[in-house]
Amino acid sequence: MSVLIYGTIQSVILMLYAYGFSLVYGISGIANFAHGGLYILGGFVTWSFMNYLGIPYFLSAVFSVAVMGLLGFVLYWGLLLRIRGINLSELVVTFVAGIAILEVLAWKGLYGFYYNLPVFVKGGITIGDVAVDYQRLFVLASGVVLAGLMWLFIHYTNMGLSFRGIAQDERTALSLGIESDWMGALSLALGSALATMAAILILPLGVLEANIGYEVVIYAVTVSIVGGLESTSGMIVASFIIGFGQIVVARYVGSSWMVIVPLAAIVLILAIRPSGLFGKYKEIEERI
Amino acid sequence: MNKGEAKYRRERLDRGIKARSDTIYAIASRGDMLYLLLPRVLPIFVAFVLPLVVGEYWIKVIVYAAIYGLLALSWDFLASCGLFSLGLAMFFGVGAYIAGALNYYFHWPVVVTMPVATLAGAILCTALLSPVVRLKGVYFAMITLIVPLLLSRLVVATKMVGGSHGLTNLTGFGNEWFSVYFTVLSLLVCLFIFRRIIRDDYGLVMSAIRDDDRAVMSAAINIFWRKIQVLFIASAVGCFAGAFMCHNYQFVGPSVFALDYSLIPLAATALGGQGTFVGAVLGSAILVPLSEALRAFGGLRVAFYCVILIASIILLPEGIFHYMARKYHQIERLVKS
Image 1 (cartoon, rainbow over the protein chains, first blue to last red):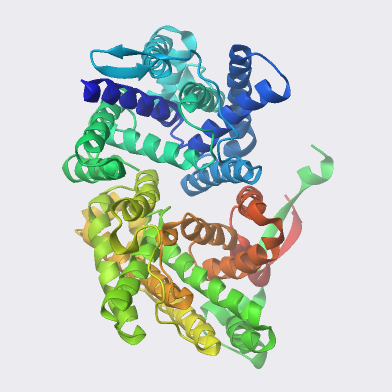
Image 2 (image 1 turned 90 degrees about the horizontal axis):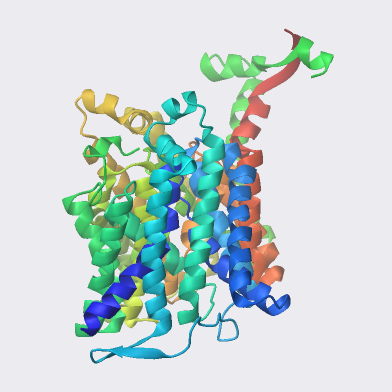
């Protein structure tokens, strides 16, 4: 029972980690390695709104999602646009921008127990014979709601449809008047906002530390690769596989072995099906 | 748009001396010979003389620069074949751990551990990454980024080979002069070999795989086998650097998988210019001393680094070496268009 509950929660956490990364990659083809940096920065911005400006928690959460979305937009418009199409440079710039964010935050002293976000609702309940605190349930619920909303957004709004158009065929989308740079910038903004939402939901469970950013990016990339990089449903399935795998290993083998699970999952998936569980490309040679 | 720009455009021309001495192999004078030799001999000369003039502290910096230079060469070699790695630390760490473990548990001398670590590490890394060579570009980069991070967590979690404390009291070199000249010499030898390889038919196939792998496949060349060979060579160089560093520090711990060892070679190559190997070495010769000079900034050092790197990528995408080579070989002038 406890494996079931905590496995589900862990899976949803992984899904939240990976959502923004997978979305940005799916739309604009940019592997946003700055994802972990944006995640932690989102948490820190929320914290600063609360503690420096004294804005109430929910309001500052909304503000910081907006601010981080804008930052993602600026990241694309200011940096990535200039080197669009040079694979190596895109890679290096996002990777390095993420590290720069994390290092500046670490330098500002973002570790230890001083920085943390409050939980939404204190306390917890017992389901069957397992104690769960409300925050974890809240993460679970909002993860499901977020995934549902994103699905609706992608499938039923104009902007979501343009995103899909760009992802499917950039040239055809261009000829229909969808500007790919604009969409790329918006996708990065959305990815950054999603990272911030994930941070606001998940960070109250632990402390706000710069090092977590690296973990986030590792998990996001792992989950996206195992699921198949272009596919959102694959990403969700993969996060459930890895999440449950981790909880099972933590329960029956030992919690220090949890890190083996993503590594094993990656090795297995690459040996069996290199394009990922739901990857569209059957031919590996197409994966440029 | 102003009128001057509309009427004139820049034109680049090869200098006469380049046309005479470079392609036609008709070296006419001492000037021509000097033109060809100077950019090749002068850096080597500087590399050998520099340790004699700088102090003890900067000798260590030269050793680091040479080691990072080796890693950058390894990165550039992989990239010449279209394999963009974000995890050079994997090669470095595997080499360091093999050499360290052999020395710590079996007390093998350095003369044995370093070659063994180089070969065994290269075989191990190639075996680990061999399923991944089917992937290209960003995909390969993502996998290689997370493998060293996960490996370091594996070492800490399973408490194998020393766990988070690492292995201490390894055999050192004792002599600074030996380590500085050994690394500089290895770097130059490696640079020379790589430049020969890339100019050869073998290198031609490598660049062809990077540019259009399907064309290479249709020429009945097994690209996966080629990529595995390239991976082996590059990882051997990386493992050698790791094995050297572990004896130099006399310590090996999970920190050998740190992001630094992936980031700095990458930054060096991006700064120096990719594809010629000289750029990689030049980049690390600039970046590593610079990072020592930035040590005053403490924790912000890495952030500064990142900013320099982003700026150099966006402002000078071709890299310093290509820029310098262009200025050396070509003249620019304005012509009427």
